[in-house]
Length: 304
Image (tube, rainbow, N blue to C red; front, side, top):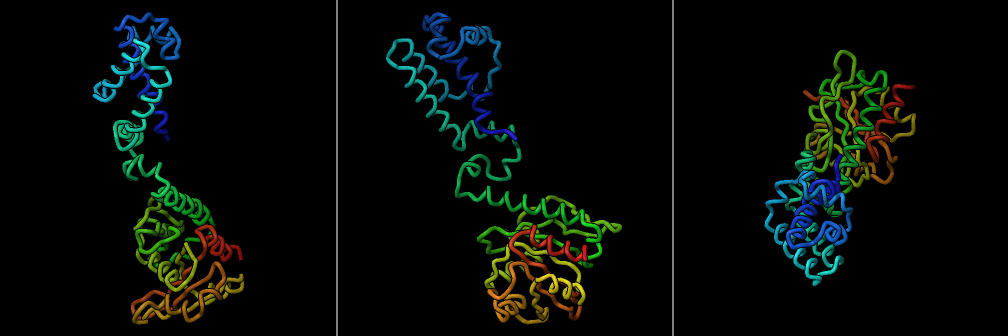
């Protein structure tokens, strides 16, 4: 993990200061005077003068940086510009270069993962939702660890596989729901998660969750497990409400079943289930306020 501020300090500033020190020396300032003007030690100025500080070519070759160096050097050398003004001018340029510009490119070079999230702009934009989406993925990772480490969970995975999903607060479609790519499968008695959670990779379980939300439920997470009447009975005995739905219903069976039951009457974590149909495997869905609550309910089945 590397912050853009580190890029500024470690990549931009040494190059900028060395360029400015060089320009001031060219204007006749002594090493001591350059150190005073830049607020650095004379030994640092000496390193700049002897090329002992590595410089980024991208910064050296940027016309805006070069123009500012010349303007600040002129101002400091003549006394027309104060150190405060020189700092302000440099800060303004840094902010400009942070806005989808040179410093962003250097940051993404240091952290290639940023390219998957529209880089620096989304990280610093409080309205981008990046923090919320990463919190959802983090929530799923923690819950998946609990789930896959639970002894006996593999036995609850249906033939179609399981998936644990969690959605954004204002989710409206499957792209707002994170889940396990490829689903969770039973591999030789062990629940196996093939990849890190991603958004938009689940249609089935994500669709169930979205249907429940359309019916008025506040659920933000869901997990499908195999159906057995005893499983439903045990979940109800643990205090979780259960709603049966008809998988052959012509429209949206889960939404209709929850609307008929009344979403406000359901426990925070609840169960939707169907006992099968023609070519349809019976399935139990556990829904709750977050992935951790859903996993807690399922782990209760394994501990009973």
